[in-house]
Image 1 (cartoon, one colour):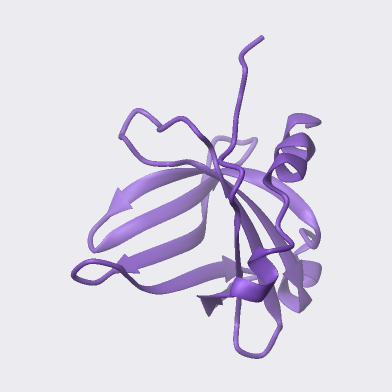
Image 2 (cartoon, rainbow, N blue to C red; image 1 turned 30 degrees about the vertical axis):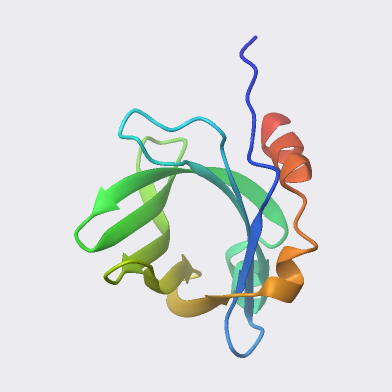
Length: 128
């Protein structure tokens, strides 16, 4: 059995209205492209409408022009874009999430980040 680890320091993102909240944990080992895959957990109105409210799932990090995308691999082999980070010169310029057919701009929440438990997110996806 492979020992899967996550970075113990997660991140929390949310939109300005509080309709979308995302907990994010990065896997400790880089993927074959040298990027950090992630576990995402969506909460809020749009997540509820899509049926993913409070559910954690793994996403693969893929380099895209001007940034990095996180895509969920579906059981039928298709991919669903979940999060897109756009980079500026030296830092993240903006972050968008895709949930319930909506594209929503989200921001880092220092306060909510203190509540993110990456090991709990890993345990949730490991049960599946």
